[in-house]
Length: 252
Picture 1: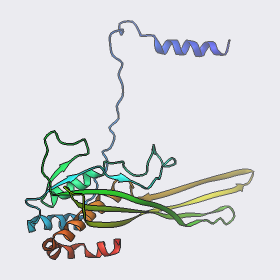
Picture 2 (picture 1 turned 135 degrees about the horizontal axis):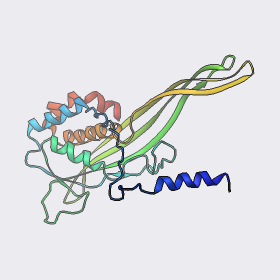
Picture 3 (picture 1 turned 90 degrees about the vertical axis):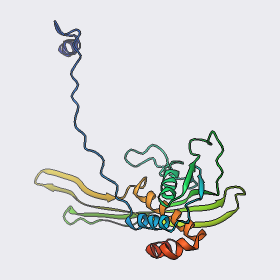
């Protein structure tokens, strides 16, 4: 009781308002948090979409876009800030809508539900995350006299598909399969030895990893959209495929 008494007094003194300050709101310090870094666009893919728009093949075409499906079945429960699935659920359809708009098409999005008034459409475009695999091929922790470097190099391999169907019949017209590696690197140093009578142990590491939720998705999805459009409209392929042909050949 004698030990807790000063603590209780201190707590009480913190919670009771001082004379003349009953109606004055407490001042809450607010820090100026830095803004998120700007996401760099995939310039070649953006230029390809602009090229398709210049050909005019989508000028009078209307596309309907639904939710983006995730069939990987992968749940993230270990990463910092992880609350569920590794990949966005459905919302990646926004990248499909954006890509088609940049290519010159009229787009009807059904992600938030069917439109109140029916709109005639020519094509339907949908996407699926097919697989997500992980590997850590290089991992080392080499110590000499208790001190040494640590290295970890790994990757995640994401595959997705974009399919183009006739909206009236759901008959598939074109399909694009895209693969995207997401690389991870960690370099550090560790120590675990005795200095005199003092034991020193610890580890420091610096890591670099692309964000699987954004940078690894917006470009590949846009590339898949450009691919199915160019497959369906040969004039667009003749004018624009050369800009990303190597990327599409490497993704198959």
